[in-house]
Length: 302
Image (tube, rainbow, N blue to C red; front, top):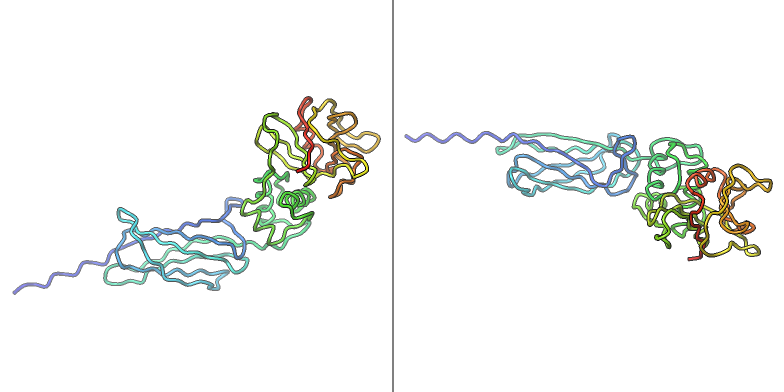
């Protein structure tokens, strides 16, 4: 009499999860509502025909449930992937499970990230403000990483809108956030052969401090009004004057005759000066400390 062979024991498997499309603030993974997040996972060992279930929760409330198909990834591994879009702000928990069957035991693995509230304004603080400042800095818009929506954050946002061709706005809205997180916006360097230099784009009312072809910092400016336009061309800094001058010029880099890049109050979001490139007072010392005697200053319309 032949004995029936014993069935093979169910395989014990494990899975791991990682995310694509997230940012990090204070070492924590974050995103914003409705932004695409890729969930990638690996299961070991791989068994053909096995299926997993993914559930996603926002502050404990489920907003996604889907069946994951495994694909062979070489060796003993299987891969799976899914796309999520958090429907709001809060903590997002992603849970992947396998229901036990004759071939494979059941298991559960989870991982999470935070979807940040985008509603901020002057004086706001927290991780979303830090994320905005981080992304502005990545595009070389000058803003200290304070975690507080302060005057320099507003100036950097104003400069960012100018760079995008969106006009003047010292605020952040969903469209601005989307562009920031996508890395949109570039200051196009016109004179990379000049080494350390400043370029004033009078069309966008921006000045960039540049090392060769690498933009270091971008600031909003107010150039000469129509009756007293800013002189166009390429010049060298010939005189540097720290502090205030009697006419209110603040930390001034003169590049030809009486034309200078300097701080001034006001420095509105339109051409208003007597020919100089006015910087907002909070930005003036930073720009002055970067420029040196003999550096080129270029002014042009694009």
